[in-house]
Length: 234
Length: 289
Image 1: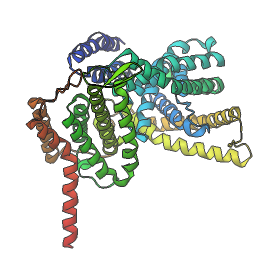
Image 2 (image 1 turned 90 degrees about the vertical axis):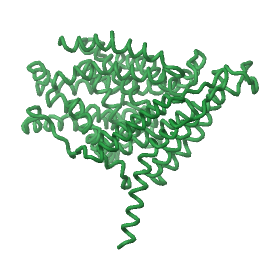
Image 3 (image 1 turned 45 degrees about the horizontal axis):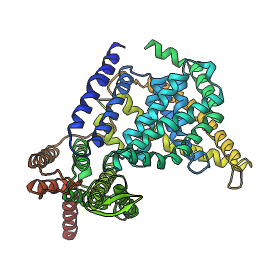
Image 4 (image 1 turned 60 degrees about the vertical axis):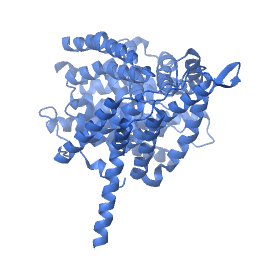
């Protein structure tokens, strides 16, 4: 526990400020490289704590199934451009805890890009999806009373619309602009809004219909096979 | 994918090359360098994928043109005003800068496509498997499960269709959503129950008791080290030569490319030259038969 706190402090207090400091010294489009580096560095503490925890086989396979399910779910729902991916990531964060939620999101984004294409957006997508899973875990993991369909749906809708979507738009902003300006940022965010809205609606709808069933399935799995006990033991 | 000489090198050599190619493409704003990077990336992509990438290359063109044209709308610095849009000046310098940004974007996309084709998932795992064992095992499992679950999902869809519960084009959005969620639910059960069997099997076979081994063995040979050293030397020359900075706004200021540019071109041509060399050798040995 203590080591992961150290890594966290090191990343947030030394590594990221140092990157920002050195990054702004670069001439030209400094924000381009700097922002991507900061995004990657911000993910390091999560990955480090996951590795040092030495996850049990059952937890590992369950996370893997949820990641694969999040990607494969796009094929199953026959509505064009309907992506339940982020909803499934959030639900796994709720059932398995914030840390596992982050790993689910980041690995989903990374693995699905092996099928599409890796690109400058990969770290941003990993961060965005990972944050979705993490944040859902923080809010709902320990509060069973809050897990009603409407609450889950609203949470999913607004998290995508206000946090995850704009984060992905930031990638567009940094990779396509010649000069950072408020007007350009506004243009990018306005252009991205319809897509984010669509994404948020898909996430909210999935949470509304599928949220409770999936959580029940995961809870049943955890109780039936004693997954949480295994995690506590080591 | 066709046989490619560069892909047969050690993953580390491949990875370092792409790190350099994409890294340089991102930070260098000199138009000659950007052009070289685009040409190098497009050439290697063509060699790797042949005609299959033609659509991607053609599809990228309008995007690049659009990006070059719309950048001056938000960047009004520059001396030569071409015309005004919404009362804001549209300058020649900003247009040139927009073209440079679009070129950088194109170069980055091209090299990332090459990266995706060369650095397959097993090579990635070989590179990072020791550093992040749990995460790379997770990635391998996910990569295997995705096609598996897609196939199972289609089976469930077909099965539902055959008992008259399928959803088609003429169903309402709500029916489609509910139908989709029912399939998803069935798929989840199927996958999760199977996961416990997999996990128990992993434990029985000794997961976590020793260091994981990888599917394919890669060894750094003398050839790999030589190519790596050559790459590092060229990259160092590019950095040492300098002259890669170029200013567009408010005034265009582009230094003449020097010998650093030659080093950069040589660096970018490494995979294409290796590919060409192998093709020539193959043709020669075929003609001898």
